Length: 566
Image (cartoon, rainbow, N blue to C red; front, side, top):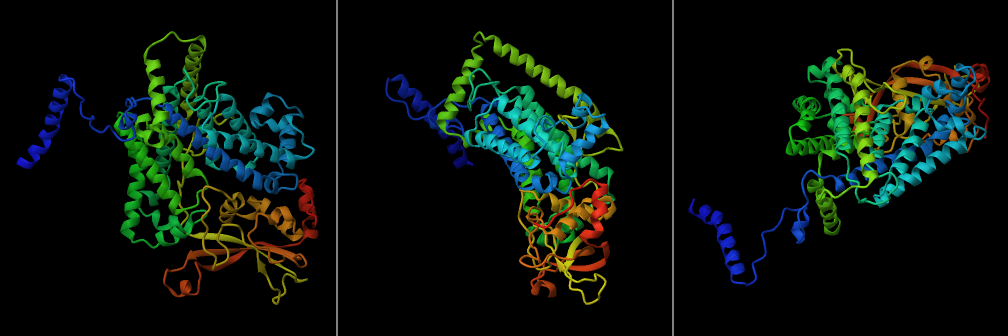
């Protein structure tokens, strides 16, 4: 106790010594070390709490990074999925929408499918899709690298991605598409109108927009938690994690080992999930410190999900609004003392209450109007959250500005896969026919292929194959279209596949879909010792053998371009 008392008294002694030295006109001793992450730690004034100049830079770079990934996926896959010869051509989709609205491109058509592609050249849709993606890539890369953005650049990114999402059909039907658009829309109002600077003068981040990001993460997490409690009973019985790692859309190698965790660990995981999604969101409203705790817990939770599965860029995207939980003091460690000193100077000018130019008052009106818009558009979203028949991943407005979210409301207890096989045999019913399998980029197929690490990238076809496996091919006609393109050995479609067993030889005469049940092998067990990550059991045919000649009428009825061998 005496030793502790001496230590506690030491600062007072030092303080008296400094005061005495100063009174005598001599040099005072150096002050105590400032809080880490503040300019004061290097001799400058400390960052004030409750400001978000640095937070804005991190938010804008994070949003730009997610846009970059999304446009990269679009550039690599759009032609094959929605291009001229895509599995679901977007030109045909827009023609059908136009026909439904009596051949006019009016407000009704624009509201149904808001996209600038209405006003672009349709004669070469592949090039149009590429130009949109490349423009998005270039713009997002600029913001990501420089940290500079204005409302114009962020609006361009939002319009470009909105345009792709609204012609993407089922390939862009995932909840994270709307989530990226809502996040990107908020990002527009973080910025000045024209100025391109990381720290624009007289344009502090609006508290309305910061709370818009917090309101977004609150709805994402609470919506995900409520849909689970109201959905599959396994969430109430704490058994969902017994199945999740094996049956999630695209498992990774970590999931293989996590699946074999003891039962008590899976129960603990489920309880933690409920705590993070149902309790932690309310920390946002309990003051600055609890808000920071909320941000830390949510980001840590998303990192754990990234480690244990390939959920596209969903988890990366969900971390973005949580950044708004941290003010400049919290994020100061990410920046140089020079940048932090400039923030302090700018904030001092803001606090001086100098006469503001007219533009600043206009911006205040815009921010208040923006806040009122978010409140208005949130009404159906809140009613949905309170409804026992809650729906998830739904937009109540065509521009997807405020949406409902949720994930894994139900958990599949068994994993089934559709395996596409081809043969060169003249008779597909010949018992001697040799059927060879096409492997996809990431989804399970070859039993000895290690599960992939791909997040935040995303293979859209692989995800849709997961959904198709617990539906029928009649509900997923595009899979027959895919079979026809594999029969024709179309190069663009083959680029979506990991392997082509008919490369360098005659195309297959027949393609069929087989339905299998898949399970992880036991680590250290017999199958694992043979190099197998998976074991499987055939359930039966998914669709019967088809050939190009037999598919001709099927294609004509849907106005799909008939596959031609390259």
